[in-house]
Image (tube, rainbow, N blue to C red; front, side, top):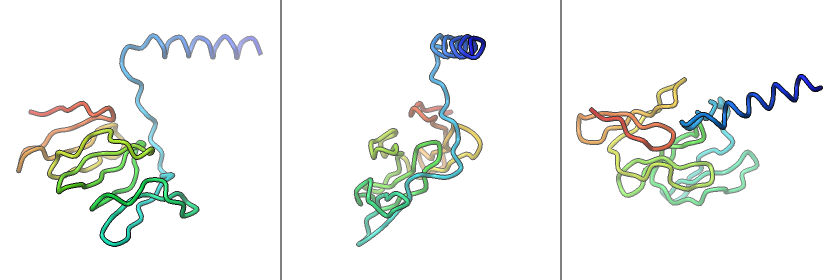
Length: 123
């Protein structure tokens, strides 16, 4: 019991001392699913209860706790609470599986990456 407590405290102290955000672990199975009606998209849980109102013109699956959505002709990413993690400003977006990065087209033919916190990495 004491050994487990000491190990847990050590791990916690190492995590809190880390100056960079800790990556969100990948979840293969999303908890919310896209639903659509009358040309608008939102998200519902596995019981069919609407959790994020139908307000997007396109809605992708959640990965790493984020989903690509399209609004007013541009793509961005929302979190599972429906708030903007990355406001819509991209021409196209694509998840890079098994990483914490998303490929985005920020100008026609110009691509870069954004991370889970919305930080951009462009050439």
